[in-house]
Every structure is written in C-alpha cells, then in structure tokens.
Amino acid sequence: MLIKAKSIRNYKIMANDGEIGKVDEFFFDDQYWTVRYLVVDTGKWLSHYQVLISPYAVLSVNEDAELININLSKQQVQESPGWDSDMPVSRQYETNYFKYYGYPVYWAGSMMWGPYPFISRNRNDWNATVENEHHWNPHLYSTKDVTGHSIQATDGEIGHVTDFIIDDSTWAIRYLVVDTMNWWPGKKVLVSIQWIDRVSWNELKVYV
Image (tube, rainbow, N blue to C red; front, side):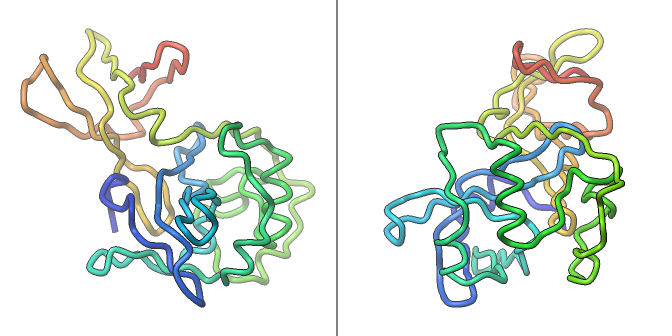
C-alpha cells in the first residue's frame, strides 16, 4: 500500500502491551531512498523523549484507527540504545541498535534490505552471515529536513518537495510530492525516485 508520510504523522505506535507514542518523522537513506527508522515522540510516557523504531518491528499500518502496530514491548523500547535527537544518527549507534534488537543490518549487502530486496520476517534469515557481503556507508536524512528542497529539472526549477509517498511493504520512498508553485500554480505532481539524478544537500536541491 502506498501512503503519504504526512498522512501517518501523529499515528499512534502500539506495542504489544500498549501505546508508546506518536510518529513525528522518518529517517531515510540517500542510496535506496528507504525509510530506516520511524521517529516516535513518546509523549507523557517517557517525557517526550524520542525513540527510533525500525520497519523490521512494524506489523501493520491501520489507516482507519490511525495507528501502527509493532511487535515490541514497551520495556524493549524503553531499554533500547539511547539516542540524542540533536545529533545525526551515527554508524556506531545503528550498529548498537541492530545488535540490541537482533535485526540484520541493512548496509551489509547489495540490496535494499542488505541481502534481500524486502524486509524478511523469517528470523532464521537474520542469522545468515553477512561478513563477506558488500558494506556501504548509509547517510540518513529526515523527511522534515528534505521537505522544502527545490526540484531542479534540466531546464529550470519546477517546485519544491512537500511530501513523500511510501510503500509500506518495503518502506521504500516511491515518489516525492512536488508543489509546482509559480511554474504551474495550484498544482502538485509526483516525481519518481528513479528520476532523481543527484541531490545537492548543500544547495537544498534535488536534480531530475
């Protein structure tokens, strides 16, 4: 199912034993444009401390009830590696995070989710060795930060990013939602991730 990132912001995150908070934003990598973490504001439960939830933990997205079910307990989340929301997510933090939960690291392998093009729910697959797999260095960006980036076509700017269309089966971002502003007033268009030539994070521009 394709869903808009903005539409599931503020969805409740339901652990096995109760609510842990609400979705605030998403972190994705710049190689596969895939959501690697849901950033969750824990509200009163942990004094609005933010925690990261991997798509590996997601069981389902319920649009009618506006909630996301995860296969973790509140204790597991509370005792997960601490994260400083004012700092970038480091490789060391990610390594500790994946080790804590027992998930296979997504940066060991040549496909979207390491050795697989999808999220494997088979824990036996998680134990497969990845020592000899190709490792790549992920750079994570937040949907909040990229919202507003300009879209630069070969013959000029066409607008700016307002939202992201996510495939909730793989958590890959499939499209950018672009407000065409003065070029085509009152219109929004979809730009496929496959059309992206490069991104200039310094210029805040996406080239297609």
